[in-house]
Image (cartoon, rainbow, N blue to C red; front, top):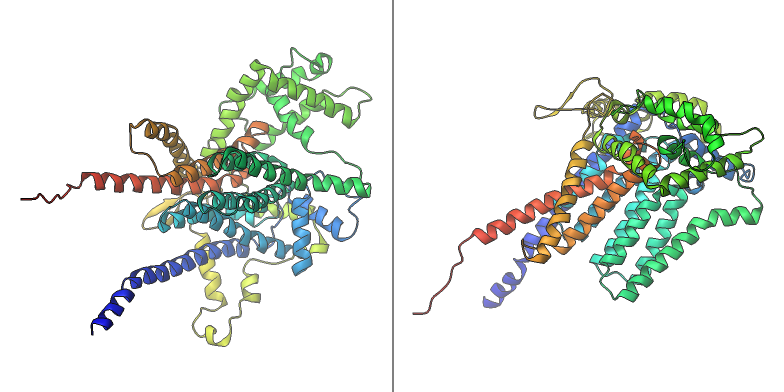
Length: 552
């Protein structure tokens, strides 16, 4: 009897933990399923609008590689996205639907990686779940997952690199292997989108500061990651040199044109003769600027007109590129012009991007408008356009096996459910729409600030708390925050802000650039809630009266 009781005593304590694991498993299954349904709803609602403003370039690149016409390709885009599309074509066949489905799945993977990173830092499961939902359910994220571009694969690789770095910091993964994996991943990121160098720098700096190792080992780990990232980033250029493909230019001059137009000094400095030709136009466009920016997105492109007026007779594109580069460097190295760029342009555009600060910043193009780009950049090689109609995907492919068909709704019921899901703030609507429980929300396509406002506000509040609370904790003024919370919170804040700052500093706060920052805003928002929970628990534990037994 006593032995039986002892055996039961050893078994019973394991039951609560086992039951909790089972419950959380099904909670995660339900959360992932709900997110996949929202993604599917987008795919079914707009089943043939898979190319946005820049998406066609990547499809053209992939087609040229698959057809063996790589040397004749003349698209000024990094080749990482095209290589990703080629790999998918080799594995599953060259079809535009394959690309889009892969992007939807990769986007869910990005949210899972962010949730796992938060969890590894020591967050309770609930806050990791919140990080996943915040990162996965924003309408602007799912909208661009439904169109071929650099956004989805870039965010996935950045989140993967951050996850691996977090594993080395929080779970003591082998430093050499983790650093090598981080370096290879960051190199792949920059091959997909060169502007991701900002996120890469954040992850490497975070790894250097947070790694629990000696100074030399930290430096060695970051050096290894940097060398491998540089090697991967240089691979396309090396291949071009070997096969004799000549460069067709890059986006550098186009990017520098915005800084030159918005903030360059056209009265002093280098190339005054050329600046004189562009000065009247530049002054006219700058005078038309308002605190809310220009009237529409097209007017933001006016620096290209300014650069065109810098050209002299007989100039080649290379000559004009050198002129733009000289004025760009002058702008960034002259205190007065740099100050102008930061105050008149950068801070305002950051506000527009993070807080949907004006109509130009917050109005995302209706996906129906992508029909123009799909037809303009038609690619029969990838069956684009496909000719699919809304609902046709469900009617054609939803055929559950016989035992399940008796339990699951039919195709019409599934389509109705997806349509109702789109009505919860995802489909274009001029007014607020009912979400649930009497709550009304804004869509991504109206003239109101969207949910990014809440995520951005939470992220900036977390940044402020960390900036004040960490030094105060070390000074003994307040209770120190958990190390994991501080580390992962700083990582999410820095990735979110740098993802927004790099494009807004160089160009402007285009709503599409919010894609790169929203998942990390979601991660930071979940960390803020975790911090609040931690403070409440700490306060309650201090306020409880201690019970002491006094010897008599």
